[in-house]
Length: 267
Image (cartoon, rainbow, N blue to C red; front, top):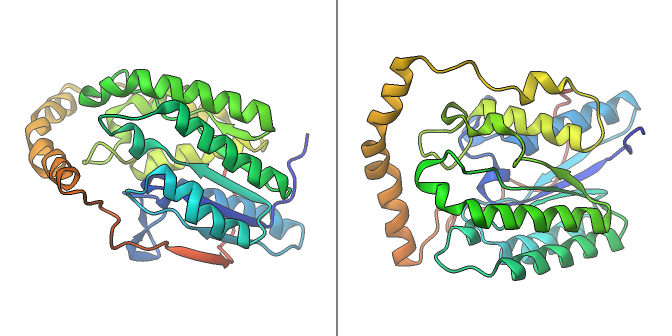
């Protein structure tokens, strides 16, 4: 089945969708990310048909789900989108206490609001943290959240990016030094997973396959970096949580309104 011709794509979410740790080659102070890459592909498809394309990205680092399906969703709906990606809840799952069922209910309601106005919806599961060191403790929560998202997508006819099954992302080389955000290669692969989830043909082996085995020197470097990571990233993150602060407190959406984006077909 040929995918629809989308012309108004709005991305909402947190740092994952903002594109953290994927530098924008056109702006040294900005991030690109998987959603921008997906938008470029959709722009290329629209251009092939002689149609205009607009893209907005309202995602902001550190945002919890209440913001994503609250103010961000309200702003997205005001743009009359025909496609909205919603990826949220990750920051909620990091908290000591979280009601995963409430997260599912909030996401279900958000998808219902979008489907009621005729917009298509793209969701994404969390990744499997089985080999993620300290974050392995999140695996049970991520598994339940994944099952809930699969049910929501099936119930409402939404598209779903299966990051849980994308085992290539379990490689530490796909992650930035903070170990929370993807590298540019990681974002590229997620963008291709998104393109595939929307129904476009891709060479799955080219983006889903694992990296070649790491050499022993690389593995030693990884282990040596644990202590440095704790000092530079994990410690400050804990301090912000204790102070009730977020890394996104002073950050605003990078693309607050629909605007053109350069076409770039992914394959």
